[in-house]
Length: 557
Image (cartoon, rainbow, N blue to C red; front, side, top):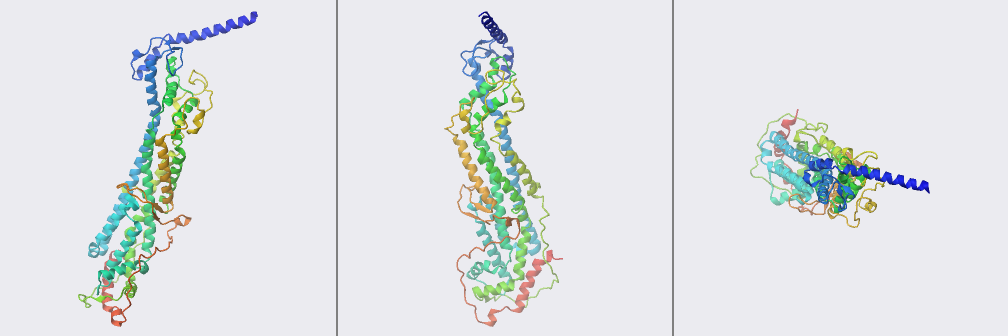
């Protein structure tokens, strides 16, 4: 009995000693006054010594250097401080991809403009007035390509535009190589309808259609993806902290003030639970965000390889010139097929068969384009450099939302080991760290989260990312899923494109079935008249030699 009495007395003395020590610390709140005023608050809000903390709503009660008014102000400060690091990280991410979007967009637009200027300069030198008189055709061609880049199939049907371009070019060249005949509009309409069957330009139109389609679809979808990232980040980062989050943040960040321990920082696991509770909805964005980032990364690799926009646009003037040369070389066969299908034209009364042309003596072809010679003139860079840079940024952006708590609860924001604030005292944090996402917060010991009420803004952004990912995957296969226009907000659901979804995409020679011929061409029977069914030898020589002189002179060795 005597022993028990002695133990009780000893315990009482220990409690009184500890209480006396804590009370001694709170007799002077000078450190709290300094720290509190450094936050921009009135130092007179802080009591000179510890007061009864019973009225406090968040922080531990008992002797305290905090008043109810102080607690309310520190709660507002906590709201700001818990958002600050998330806002800073989000702003950096937003800025990074806004810059990349601008770099890519400026590069593609300048590349289109450079290609147009290059073709114009080359064709002026090569074809002279013959090109100048038909320059509008090529100007319209590049304007249509630019509209497609900006607004997609909502503004331009790429297949139809290319078919019209080659049909119009055939019509103009057909007149030039058959100057001894007169052609009505109806006759030339028949010629245009035969363009695909005649293949006057060789295989250039088919290959160029495939290359343009898949590269344009890839670049405009990729740029759209880059533009989406800042938009999603901006919307998600504006989601307000819940009252329970602010309460938990106040307890974590400023309740140490009330016990006079202004330099005490939270335990890391305690911080993680608070942040995972506060950012539960944002973490649910992570799955679709990562799928989107992966799709962007895969499409970036396509841009470096088979869908390289730069390697398609830079030599487009040479490719079109090769098509024109094919037409020139095969003009007799093409003309004969047209005459068989559309009928024999009437001879031109104005044509003079006695006109002569000087022999040039030139032989040869255009110099082939080497894809290894990548230009750096568009926006002062190259597509390879741009994609290499953006791929690094995409890797860094993956799992951005789910790793935010770890990123925030690091370095100077937390205290290592057991010398940290656990929410009630300076001691080890014993609770288990819960997982990310809304569903896991049901067991969060520090933040009350209603898991039955997901945030509407974040759910909408999950849907946006999911839709964009489907567009990116379609573009990866060379298909264009029509998107809302950036300009007029219009858009459709039809798909077009090369449909390339196999390893063969990595080669230059990809073969596709020829699209069906629109409509049945009006075919007139061949006139059974030897004199009308054949060319005048002198006329043929004049037409072909004149065209050859204009076509070949600047490019032949």
